Image 1 (cartoon, helix red, strand yellow):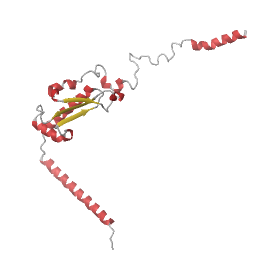
Image 2 (cartoon, helix red, strand yellow; image 1 turned 180 degrees about the vertical axis):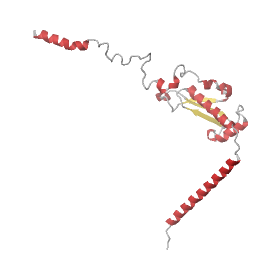
Image 3 (cartoon, one colour; image 1 turned 120 degrees about the vertical axis):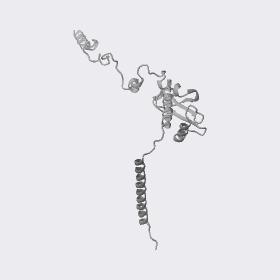
Image 4 (cartoon, helix red, strand yellow; image 1 turned 90 degrees about the horizontal axis):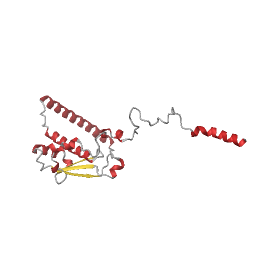
Length: 206
């Protein structure tokens, strides 16, 4: 009798564990889609790279790279890829995502001669001894996006060098002369103060 009562008591205690949870249990709806959307972590690709949604994936060529054939001859460029230190996590150690574009500036006849001369002066730090203008990009984890960024840099350089210098007006020339005079006056004043401080530190030897 005692054994039977103990068995019934044990089954009544374990019954709550063996029965399925009720329909109103909140655990069932913890990750249930709400309004047709699935749960996404804060580290999901859609949130880390919001511009990569839809059809804009790694194998899709950006519009900038497609339009490059119209204004920049790709056959005149030397394009290479190497390891990147930009975004991508462990992907940067596996894929050559960094893009490098170079071309000989002196023989680039698709750029006007005055523009090339101005580019050679403005961007002389990006030109090697062979006369090649070198541009790199590692802003993205995808090769084509970095290539499009390099091509956009070339367009920006050409547009910047194509702008003609604006002739200063008489008022601007007067203001510039006044600023230079004030700067020289302030420089000489500080120089005299420093000279007086150094003179006062001297020790006279008898």
